[in-house]
Length: 404
Ligand SMILES: Cc1cc2nc3c(=O)[nH]c(=O)nc-3n(C[C@H](O)[C@H](O)[C@H](O)COP(=O)(O)OP(=O)(O)OC[C@H]3O[C@@H](n4cnc5c(N)ncnc54)[C@H](O)[C@@H]3O)c2cc1C
Image 1 (tube, rainbow, N blue to C red):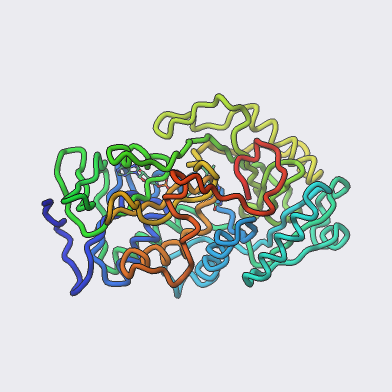
Image 2 (image 1 turned 120 degrees about the vertical axis):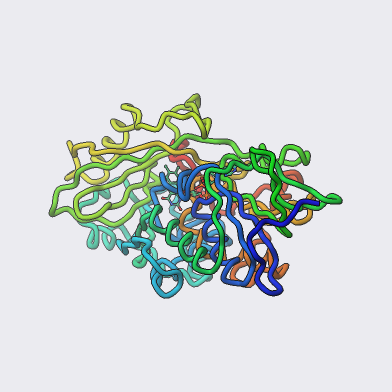
């Protein structure tokens, strides 16, 4: 049986190892440590060195799948009250957010807004005239309806992740960095810890993999997998004229998203433009492709004509960890008691990380989550063939990169 890690257990507290110090792992570590668990976080690199550092960090509630919207809505409370709920900085900026729909998505948008309002989300449908009144810079002649969220915006993904890590440390969590985990350790069929790349085994009562696109290889030896497909996605920042203001937008007609970044930049993003892009999370092209810059600049200029000819400033690529149904896998691995996974966020896992960390910590330590019901995200649904299909998923151009 592996020896428990040197981290001293709080009285009555379980010892939990979290693998992965991205926004998901650090949020989980914070909530676990605050609940009295003895937490050790391992990362093969540094805090926030994976995909969280590359996030567009949109904070919006509009999903077509109610359990995801519920997590996003409950997470907004954190972004709005960061100092009292976590401490440090998350860089949240309230800008407002809109989903823009053409005629093919109008009925779906109506149904989804009704679903979101039933959860409690602060959102409303807007006619195109109403929308134009609050966003005068946007071209609207190819739009049919909008859904608006006044309290949404964006945050700083690196500040957010580091703030969770600092708050976890303050609650007693230990971070073991530059230490790749090579395998999971078991004892009598139960997950009993992790073995690092030097061969040293660290024991724990529970292990959670928050390892994004790197998750499946660690599950392989147990004959189980989520089925995560890495997909390269890009964001680019363009210079915005000083007087031009706009909210954050998901444009289902033009097939991209954009948001302001500070006072004088606009960030725009999409998924893969071509299916054969190299998406190995350890060896992918980190820079923007010229074709991506050209295409996003074109779509931005279409939707917001004053951005025509806007100068490209910088940008980068990252890897989405796309699950078989583009929804996250969160919860226990049935075949290996004591083992949990939180991965497969499919390009949308930043904004839900705060409430997800709270709910998953409850599930691990108490056997039931109170903050939000995570049952719909069960990791076993893939093997069972029970893939999630929300009732009103939008018709979108493939290169948008993920379902809403
Ligand atoms: C370009 C881009 C734009 C995005 N835009 C948005 C957005 O606007 N809004 C939104 O909500 N989401 C967005 N996302 C998605 C969001 O950023 C991710 O879902 C989220 O950051 C995932 O966090 P994570 O902690 O699961 O993964 P990561 O941040 O990737 O963390 C995983 C960590 O695990 C570590 N690790 C992996 N394997 C091992 C191992 N064997 N041993 C030790 N450590 C290991 C890695 O080093 C890494 O630090 C975007 C993503 C990208 C790429």
